[in-house]
Image (cartoon, rainbow, N blue to C red):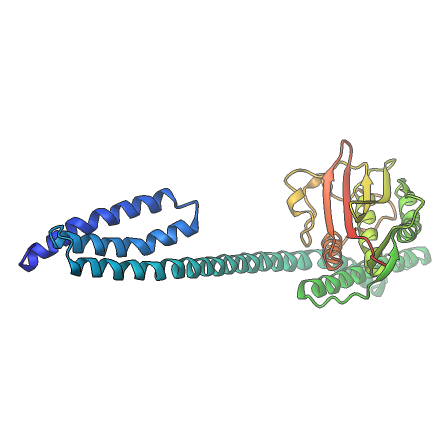
Length: 341
């Protein structure tokens, strides 16, 4: 047994350092696996290193004092290892939760920046048109009755477009703020599809697109807000019409599968590129040129928020909305729980 301080330190290091190195190797090998094992090893390293140092200093003499020390260290390990595992898991959950919150905040901030950029661009266009036509009328540049009527009609169209954008902004702000309150009641999905079909038939005819529906004979009851769910389907149909070339087809269908109701909107447009699919429901995201609205007489330009609003409203109904490409065109599908009544 060493007597002087230098020898005591040397023996302690010689016996404890190997334990620490072995523990470090175990942690390295287990870094991407079990959190429980990692926390247990972290607690046992100083305990076992202490025991090894004491044994080394004692000259491997297993005396009564060494036995008592070993018992104390064993009890300490039995208490601290479970505590460290529980506290480690709690800290890990907190760390993951905080990371998720930070990621969500960054995503929200990015979305806000994109929305501000979109508003500054898209609202400026109709405003500039209205101002130019109003100045032309005020300065007498346009004086013919037909020309004045045409300018007035165009100003009315641009004003309606601005109104739709403002309505969409208001709806999107309620969804993002969690302030959306829906009055839910039993709704027959088939009746809602019939209403959406009738409301969009004229627009489809002006765009020279066939609009049809395929529905079962039995009722499909869901608990929903008919106004909100109607807007979801209307947004999906309007989007499909805007991105389907003249002569194409947009179809609505509904059914039930595995205790869920579903409604689908299929189009025969160019489809959606793989790069756009993950962001298709983002605010103001219109995608690449392949998904730019098809020019068609009488078909109003979208606000860029229709799909984002649809996704938010479906989520408020505790449902899911997905999009996939088909052999020709794309398919948007809304899934909702069936009504229990």
